[in-house]
Amino acid sequence: MKLKVYSIFASIDGEVNKLHQGRLSTFIRLHGCNLDCSYCDTKYALSGPHMELTVDEIVNQVKIMKPKKVTITGGEPLVQREGVVELIKRLLAEGYGVTVETNGSLPLVERSELFEGVRAVGLEKVVERETLPQFCWVVDYKLTSSGYNKRMNMHTFTSLTKDDWIKFVITSEEDFFEALNFQRKLKFTYRKVGKGNLIPNFAYSPAMYLGAKLEYAFNPSALVHLMKEYGDGDEVLNVQIHKVIMLDEEVKWHEWCNCQSRETCEVCRRYKQGDAT
Ligand code: SF4
Image 1 (cartoon, rainbow, N blue to C red):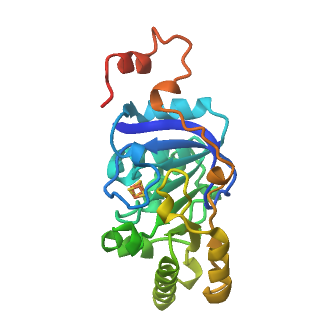
Image 2 (image 1 turned 120 degrees about the horizontal axis):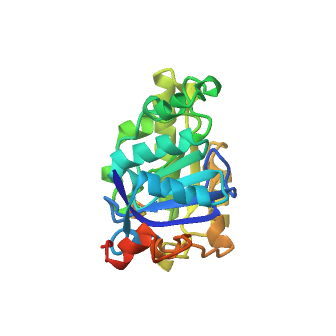
Image 3 (image 1 turned 180 degrees about the horizontal axis):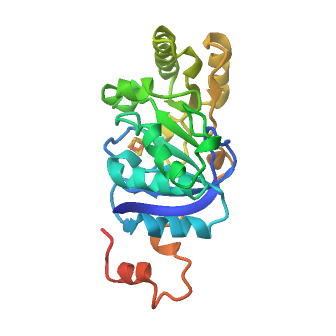
């Protein structure tokens, strides 16, 4: 099983997640996406150069890095569903914390399926029934301004737990109120079906100009004002830390190989042969 990978790099996880914003993480940025959002800040990963790597090759690269947490992102990871499931299971079984960022248009993977890899190495005793302590989904709910609101998969949003995050990218006041409306409807649905104790977390992320078009940027302090004035009191502001401190650590796949010899390394050999599209 091979995955299309744009890059693998270590940095801080600048966005909300169960395993802590600001924590060091190894990012696996996968290639390709099924959407093309107006404010996308990772267009470079949607098409163009990438490498096809096996799960083993990816896990070996992760092991070279320092972080004990991995962020699987894209693009859209779940367009490569089968390989991503295998990758998550391997990483959990190796003891890594894993967060997966996904765009809300595709069905999630059942936790029980991801749990298999953990059970295989005998870690299940520490795992609660409903959740994996070292795992969470961070799911974007695409608002109308993205151009893809109609592609949101409601089952995806009703299958989350209290360990997961729903993220709204806010580009305007209208976005804020649309997000708030969705948040309230979803909370109502969870309570109605007796899952009030599993309501996920809601993060409001002001669109930031780095990587995206300036016209979409929204002032974080204006967002705080809206949250204080109109919110439910449990929303979280998600300022992308890596953009505030202007980290630019992303390294393209062909630059990260840490092999001792590029002459004998299989990944480098394939790169030289043009095994990238
Ligand atoms: S889902 Fe994410 S990666 Fe895909 S186009 Fe939208 S913002 Fe970009």
